[in-house]
Length: 284
Image (spheres, rainbow, N blue to C red):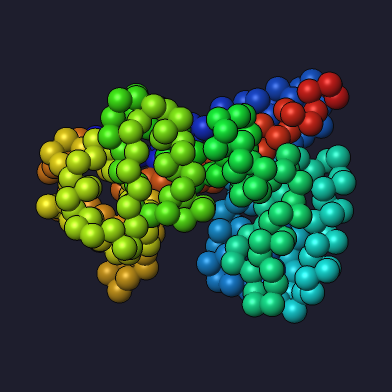
């Protein structure tokens, strides 16, 4: 079985981005700028933000983190987003989720200018994905597609099954697989006899947040399995797939951790660089 090593591919991507940023610096250009907004003290969010800070520093971005108290009012947060939208030095804006209670997540995400929406969640970017137009793509499913591409796994003509229908992963994942000419089936919590469908998959993407949901008897021999789930259990971090049980059957599979997770941050950096190119082509 081939281990789809997201950690190694993400490191390769960071090196490529760093080389481009060094070239921009050598030419006297403005460095790509990413601003992360984090509201409150959610422990998981703090970890994610620190990882993003380190990644930005590694590739040489001009990044900043705006940390706001949990008591931040909606209008203040929207005002900060407006200021960042108007700032020519900021190419990407990322609002760390979840937000504290009392803040309207959707209203805040929509307020971010679509061309600075490096998370790819703005309705305009989602609409461009649906229509097959260029745009900033959601980082996790885009990371899955990049991982498959770098391992020379072809989607065209394959039957891809996506387990999960979230707007962050499941739905855009299905659209990206369709864009790559796969035949796509989407399953979810109300799908009867899930295994009967997952066993048909040439490429199986599990993204439901349920520990070890996908068992050995639910996967076809020789399938490519991408596990997006990251679940904290007493035994440690596990995915949505029973990794040890699936390894004898799968042709290729992502580990948890070290699979899709690192690719998500790598695609955030890639999206920021894409946004920068769109903003700053003529400013060298």
